[in-house]
Length: 492
Ligand code: ARG
Image (cartoon, rainbow, N blue to C red; front, side, top):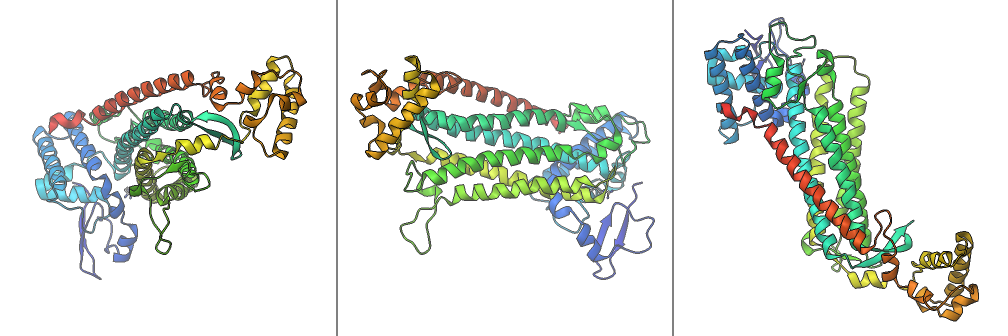
C-alpha cells in the first residue's frame, strides 16, 4: 500500500491528504504546507499527470505487477477523472501538496483502495519530470503553431509589398534602398531559426524518465520502454539519476522562448519607430493601439512596447532557471519545484506575444508613398555610383573617395543625388557618362542586388517561394507532433 496518512492539522483542523506520513509523529504545520505546496502552479500539469499515470498503470499490468482487473479499474478511474476535470465536475481546488497528491487522492474517490497501487515502482521524482517533459512537448507544439502564424503575417504583408521601396538602415542611418518585402522576410528567417531550434529540441525533450523511480531505478521488474512508448516518447533515459536531476530541457525551452522574444522585440522596436510621425512608415490599426488619458490626439503603440518590455521578463526567466540549477547536487532537490513557475511564465508570455504581434502586423498599413519619399535626397544610391566607377575601371577605394566628395559637394548645395547633373558628376570624375544618372534611381539600385539573396525582385520572389515551402514543412511537422500524444487514445 502507498505510504499515506491523513494528517489532521491542529491549528486549523484542515484535513490534508499526504503521500507520505508514516514516520512522522506530528502533522506538518499549516504554514509549512502553504510554503511548500506547489499545487497552485503545477495543477496545470493535471492532464499530463493523468496520462502518465494511465501509461504507468498499463505498463504495471503488462509487467504482471498489477492484475488485469486492477489495471482496468485504475485506467477507467483515471479516464473518468480526466473527463470530469475537463467538464468542470471536478475542480482543481483544495489543499494539496501538489498535482500528484491531488490526482491520487481524487482517484481514490473513484476506484477506492486499488488507487493505492498506482504509485508502485514510481516516485514523484520521476513522475514530476515525466509530466513536465510531456507538458514541454505540448508547449513546443503550441509555440510552433504561433510562430507559423507570425510567419504567415509577415509573408502576407511581404507579398503585398514586393514593389514597395524604402531605405534600408545601418546605424539607423539611411544606407541603401531595399524592397519592403525583403525587409519583412528578414524577420521571417529569424523566426524560421526559432522553429528549427524547436525541432531540434524535440529530440532532447522527448525522452522518458518514467521508471527511474526515486533516483536509482525501480526495484520491481517494470517495462519502462512500454510506458515511454505509450506516451509517445522516442526513447528512455540512459541513467536513472540523470533522468531525475536533468532540467536541461526546461532551460532549452526557456532559451528558445527568450530568443523568440528577442526577435519579437526587435520587430516591435521597428514598428514603434516606424509609427512615429518622423518616420510615418506604418499606421497601426485602431484596434491595435491605445490612446492617452490626457492628450486626445494620441495613438500609442502600447502593444508593441509591451512585447519589447515583456522580453526582459522572459530573458530574466532564463537567468532564474540557470541560477536555480547551478548549485544543485544530484538528484532530486525540492528546489526543482521552482522550475515550473519559471517555465510556465516564459511560455505564456512568449505565446501571447507571438499572437498579438502577428495580428498587429497583419492589420497594419504600410505608408508606401512616405517610404518612397524617404529615399529622396538621402544619398542611399551612393554605393551604386561608386560601383559604376568600378565598372569603368576605377579602384573601389578611389571610387569611394570620389563619391564621398560628390556627396559633400551636393550636401553643401542642399541637393540630393537625384538632382545632380552630369556636369556636376564630371567635376569629380571624367569617367561619368550620361548613363550614370540612371544609376541614381532607387528602382535601379534594388535591381542590381541579386547576389546572396539580395533585394532584387526575382531574388525576393525566390525567397518568398522558399519561405512558403518552409511553412509547408512546418505544417507537416506540427501534424506529426500531434500524433505523438494520441497513442493512448485507443484506451479511452
Ligand atoms: N511538487 C514536487 C515538484 O514539483 C513534486 C516532487 C516531489 N518530490 C519529493 N521528493 N518531494 O518538484
